[in-house]
Image (cartoon, rainbow, N blue to C red):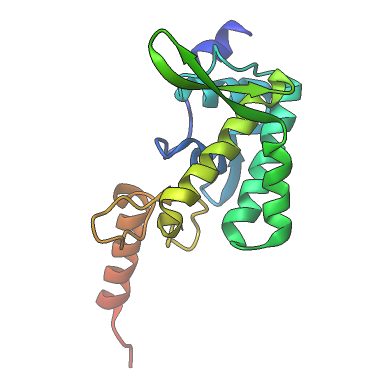
Amino acid sequence: MEEDAMTEVDPRPFVGEPFALDLLNTRWQEHGRQEDLLDAPAGLHVWLAGHGLAERFPAGAASLRAVRTTRRALAAAVTEPGSPDAARQVDEILDHGRVRLTLDAEGPGERAEFTDPHWGAAWTAAQDYRRLLATAPDRIRLCDQPDCIRYFLDTSRNGTRRWCSMALCGNRAKAARHYARSRGPRA
């Protein structure tokens, strides 16, 4: 890996979501333009490093293709819940690995195994999406800000969070409402 890619900072304005949703958030809108962290292997390395996985998974061209394929599959699954085609796409990703149950001196455990190491990060994201569906399917949300394309897991107590970030999109929405009220009806 190139030295500058190892030290590059994640340029996205919103990070920290579960692995599967954070993969979806590798695309974002900024100043009216869509940005894509995964336009090169260096961006894949940045994304993996943000999750402490840069040493575990390769970040070359083959891995990038697998992760982009997974991002498309997860986007279909999130935007079309219950779609057989979307479920099939995620299933195809999951076919690239498995969870192996283990028993060692520390007790029971599990270890992920992959048919090809280049599918490791992609499979892990699909597996994380499965976990989210099993634990909180109704808490996976798209930000309510009309020009935002980020996803988040609603961890609020009452499950009514609307924006990916109050500081980013929530404030924009409040400012827009204030501006609309202050202009009021014109004669």
